[in-house]
Length: 229
Image (cartoon, rainbow, N blue to C red; front, side, top):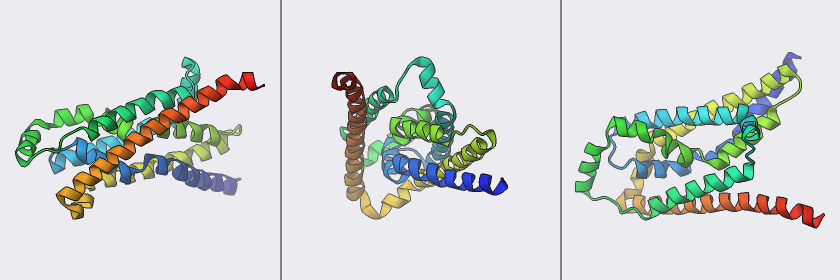
């Protein structure tokens, strides 16, 4: 029995890690974090990275454990979550695409304006949701939670434990990617960084549109199913 629980724990860890990490993709969202925190000091960015990682872990953990029950209680389907969240992601990306790159003088003003209080206000929205942890990852966490659930309590507990450990590991990777985002982009130079940030914002816009389309497609299929039958 102990071996069975250990195997269930390990398999669940690998399953949750492989299912959620590519969707969260901290390496791809790190440039967005860097752009949205333009003017922040390294210490402020480090504090933000820790707070965002904690927020992501809490949000994904809640989604994995009780997300499906909450949606059922309010009568909200996953396609609706995808449509609404995808619109938020697309709107955030559009703002990033249309933001002018700041000059050196503007950086000084931004550094003075980007206080720790402002950083705390922005830590959850938009830096955690929807930039770091969007509707696609929340839907994935809900799906993973449903998959890991089992009628046998001990087995279900072992599987959920593996899923929680996977979220913790992803949170550490998210923190490292955001904490050292500036160092990772430094070899590109200023011009290369601007181009990379614009491309990242465009990819984020496309991702938002894709999430909306996936949600609409599921809704349309559900509407067409009775007709086709």
